[in-house]
Length: 238
Length: 238
DNA sequence: CCCCTTTATAGTCGTGATGACTATTAGTCA
DNA sequence: TGACTAATAGTCATCACGACTATAAAGGGG
Image (cartoon, rainbow over the protein chains, first blue to last red):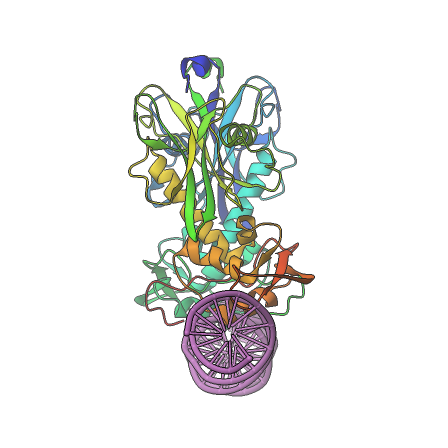
């Protein structure tokens, strides 16, 4: 391969972050408002350039810390989504963007970081058309997360360190946009070894009403075998 | 964002292809032998630079056509795997590579294309250490394909347009490295609506021996609901 | 030509997972 | 004290699936 032949081509490499959380029973995405053209006034996904000495994963963590002002990104779930490389996706120059999906438990209040305009949590689908191809990236992230809930233990990444089964079920219901039967969900989760572990003797009042729920924390398992399938949209025989 | 600040950084963007097929009951990968340093004499995944006017997907198809000399890439399954961007993955320069997994039915005989050295089908895992991080890319592709067999209809991408259920089962067994019960596999596949469609009245002699098998073609379904789970490695209760 | 091998296909049986329920417990609020 | 709410316990029928056995349809070797 002739490296020098293409070494001068001006490719910029960026990361874009689809940061999702659940607040007030609804899925929210972290968005920034663009101040300049193109797409001035539109919302966009947070992101930025990959530095010469960074991997895309490192850049994603750095950008997320910069734009949210958050420091405890240790428990964060960060996962590469895919790379978007259409030649015309940025009108100014050739930009190849590695997109990531990130999940956060409690939505921390973001404050404008060093780099970009102020970041805000926006309910999923309520932000009008996003800049560039970010609508598609966000939709891809949503679809990916929804699919991974079925066969992995990813749902706990949306939950605080200790959570009730009701909160865990809310994650599934919010991301999938469905309702689940509570006793059956409970039976399934508890029957899956390593999904959750009971916190002995602990209980939380769920907003004051009703019987206090037992607390659990994430277990060592990473995958769900057999999976927890979402109810089929069609009238499937199963 | 200040674009000009980083526009001069020398990022090269390449594609790497993990092209898989099944030949003689074994999984094979398409590899090229490197003629120059670094990694001279090692095998590597086919790939090359993304041109300024191309998306990574377009570049992947072009490189594949160039290195295999193949023209009928229409029925090819090509899927983005992930992007590898460690700063030191190529000792010469900063290269970000978008990796793809590709599946082919019948292994066409590759002949050295315009770009690289001769390409060859090599049994999976029998090629010694590959160049760069290509061992990991190939392993990631294998893992991804194995996982997608469980919950998608991807297996038909390894099969010719018309195939027997025995051939389809061979795909699962080869990729997963397991054996499956034939009547149960048959029951499951036929019970999944849209997975395969019978070719009326057609049958194929399976190498001359045994009862001729009925022929099927891929159906319209894309996903398997419920999935066809591979046998668990551990003694799982299910 | 008969029988044996090989492979495809048909069916059976028991168990476990799951959807749809009902009942009970343990809290708050009026 | 009595609604109301939410968590938890349990039941029951159905379905999916693993483990089998049986039959059908081809070729090959004596």
